[in-house]
Each structure stands twice: as C-alpha cells, then as structure tokens.
Length: 197
Image (cartoon, rainbow, N blue to C red; front, side, top):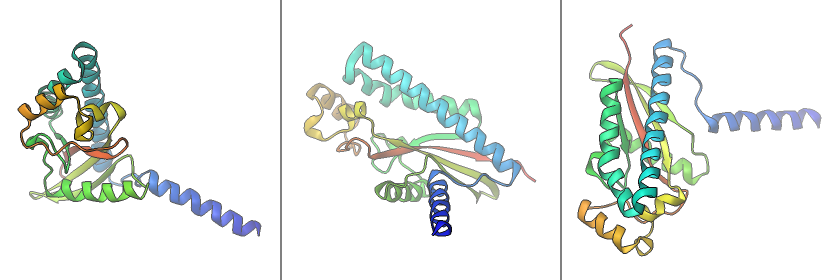
C-alpha cells in the first residue's frame, strides 16, 4: 500500500512538472536563446503594463486605447530593434493587423487555447526549429485577460460608449472583444536565431 501511494505521489509530481514547463534545453545555444527570450518577454510585458497603468490614471480607459494602439506597437518595435530579435504580441483574435500571427504562432496559439481549456496552460512554450536554413528558437509566453482588460476587450455590451467609439475609429475590423476574465488573449512571441555551430 505504501509503494502504491509513493507511485501516485511520484506520478503527481511528474504530471505537475510537465504542466509547469518544458525540460531545459540541452544545447547551450538554445539555453542562452531561451534566457534571452524570457528576459525580453518579461521586460516587454512589464513596460506595456506600466504604460497602460499610467494612462489609466491620467486618461481612463478611452485614453488607454492609445497605449495599446500606438505606444504598445512602438514599444514592441523598439524592443525588437534593441534586442536584435523578433518580438511581437500576437493573437488569433487580434485588434491590430500587426498582431496577426504567422503560421507557426497560429498553430501554437491554438494549442495553448486547448491546454488552457484543459486547465494545463504552461507559463511558456518554446522549441528550436529550422527556418530559412538557420536554427531558430521560437518562444511564446501566454497573455491572459485580466479584469482591467475587460473595459476594452470584454463583451460589447460592457464596453463603455466612449471606449467603443475610440475602438471603432481606430480598429474598424476589430476582432478582439467579447473576452471573459481569465481567457487566453494571445502571447508575446520572441524569435531568436541561434548562432551557427
């Protein structure tokens, strides 16, 4: 009976580890690229969140649309340029066409959505792929809908008229409303080209 309980405990620990994340890369180039992708995605998320909170205090939710429509895009481009890697915010239900996922990202976002529905969403996903004749680390960090996000991304009837007016003007083909709190909104996507062996 003790052995059976021990096996169950070990299986639970292993299952939790599998859900928590992937095994670290064995290739030192991939490990360095993964560290870079993690650092960049965290810095970008923190910077955009700070800009958003600052604008919410100054101009409310209608003003916060400006952060997402202009400042977040600009900040993301600056992170890409400064880091020398591709950094994007992507979603299957994007508001800005610049955030439309490529084929790889779309497949990963769909897989993340399934895992989230199963309550097994990892904090990140990554893999080394061959693209354009080079090895590349592709990294995605999920973005979830927080309560404050609902003011602009929630059900249409719950978005304030002044916010809706700005959204309709800025994004006539908006696909990013109708979310509920805790849903998967998209991901920060980082692409790092590995140095040649």
